[in-house]
Image (tube, rainbow, N blue to C red; front, side, top):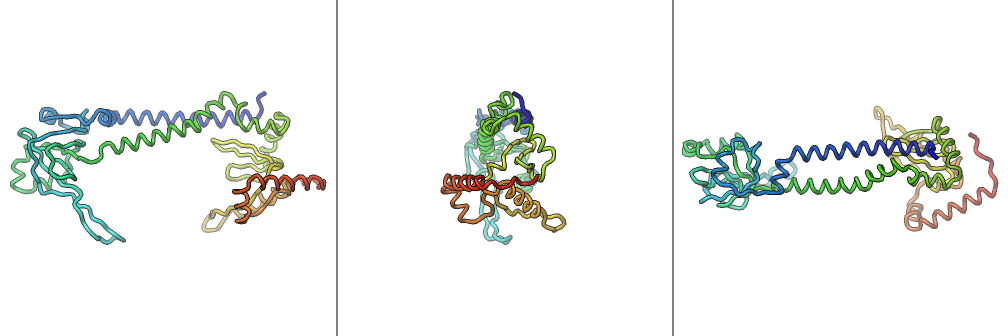
Length: 327
């Protein structure tokens, strides 16, 4: 039996599946675009020598750029990377975070940025030499004369794999979210009858009659806002990716949580919330209204007792036979 509730569940789940499909396609396309990094992350560092370094004309397209290079000796260039520490915008100290060395590889010189001293074996990413570093290295007459012996790139021994580890962590989180939200959406799209909301509505009585009643009331709600429709009998949540249906008859506790919204610096929204709470009090007079720390503690620590107390109030109210609230 396909009711309005089934149709709404199918619609929201279809949107979720489409959204997850776009997310996963985007992730796959991003990984494909980073195929050079992925290959170097998995298979590197590649041990290379002068023949390979001589063949690299553009490090941005080189297939192997996470490398391990061994030279005969390392020469201090005198160029350092200095980190300035500040507090409140005022410099407090300076420290040398890295130094640049010239690694002798055959008859060529490869600049290495290292934080661990002068290495004869360098491991890291081949990076194009920026203009400011080039000026610092070759701005002195003695070094400028041998500039042609230097490769136009350098080795940065920073954490090359760190972005990959972050990406793996993000992929694991994405996989968990897909398992948590994407797979259920796919399942409920093809079998909406298994959705918890369908089972909840069935526990109320006639599913078809309730669905028709809720659909009719949703077309002319008493109040609406924040993706919720407040009708005579129901609270209906209708957003792009969510659909839910609740009854006023099941209300236990309602209170106002103030979040400041303003238009032209004029607070808005409070009167609407007050009106909704007043309407809910008419429809479920047995429920608890208002907030206090004691109520919050009772609900968190003794939820079952709280619910039983409200149910008892509901039975007492029903036994009094109050007049049905006017529509």
